[in-house]
Length: 82
Length: 110
Image (tube, rainbow over all chains, first blue to last red; front, side, top):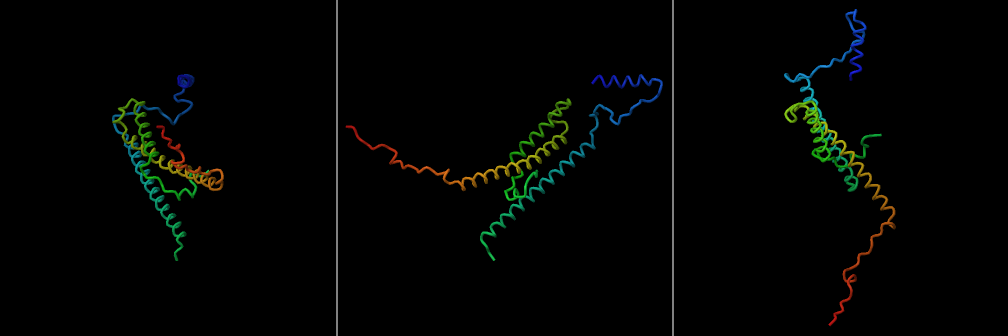
């Protein structure tokens, strides 16, 4: 953990004369702020939860109807009605 | 490798409340609580949206895993019974002895 930090500082020291860093990073480390709720994260979590439950209920109902359909088909063949 | 072949749909689907779902849902919830613990947040009261999400994901995955498990067991049972049916000479049931034949004759010693 210390080595990359030091390398970064070395880079800045090497280009001490210039006003910019040689490499840029899209990733910035931030300390999590727990004073305000992360409404985006909360919304995402709840909407994903709702979507998963909807998918699960749909899948289960599909499975039940498909099973009952196959049972009916099987019994239909056995009794051999018109 | 297909997750669930078509013939698996001939099996009765597991109920929505099943062992695998319950267990993995509990595990997901525990993972959320653990995450709270590691990030120094109040364990039960923080990130309820996260707890619900993780529990839901566990429940969801559990349902599909149980379906796959039931199919694997049903397939194994079908192959087993097929083998037993095709080799009756290896699976002869022993003739049951009646209790009268089992006991010794009663010889009173007076």
